[in-house]
Length: 236
Image (tube, rainbow, N blue to C red; front, side):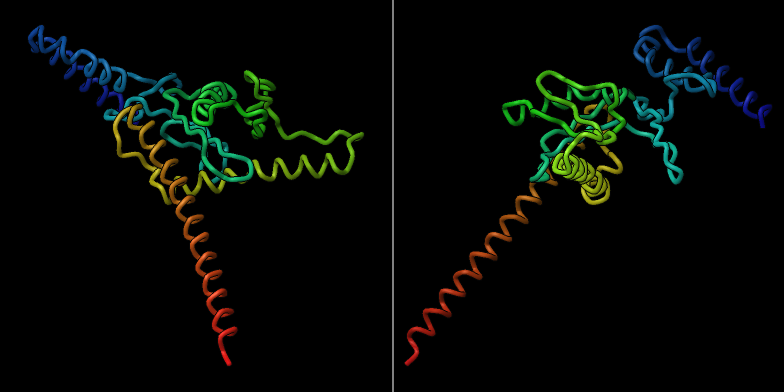
């Protein structure tokens, strides 16, 4: 197999050199980026960084999940932020490089400030954001062992807060499986951003429609109750 791979790489490099020799200067300059992409894809090694995983989407990168059933994913990293109690998505940001989770906080918090008009006082994150305690005016709260001197009230409050933090996991699952975030059909990093924003907006819109339908149902039930009461009052 290694011999076959070397043979294929030799043929591919020969074809690339032949194309560069025979193309006119103007067309060669127009195709320079494309040919450079092919050269990188052919000659990359297993341990190289910034490898090419897709010719039609060269910005795709490998993300280590650390889970037994799915160790790696290929795509673009996205950060999702939602309100603590309402479950409304107030931040959705796509990143063109595989940055550390803690480094995504300034951009996602800046987007939340733009959407809501003010920065949140506290942000509850998981342990993947270790190393960040304060971003601007926002305090980053991470799960940790309770203080032995803390009261039972403080311990229950901390458990409740981080219980709400984990509520974002099923929201991400809904975005992937019900709002077309699992696979993006739009091209480039701009397409990644558009797809993420549309999925988050659709999630919020559906949540608003459900609340509206529930409110209309309660109003209808209330009117029916008034009608029955009025009917009972008019009976002889």
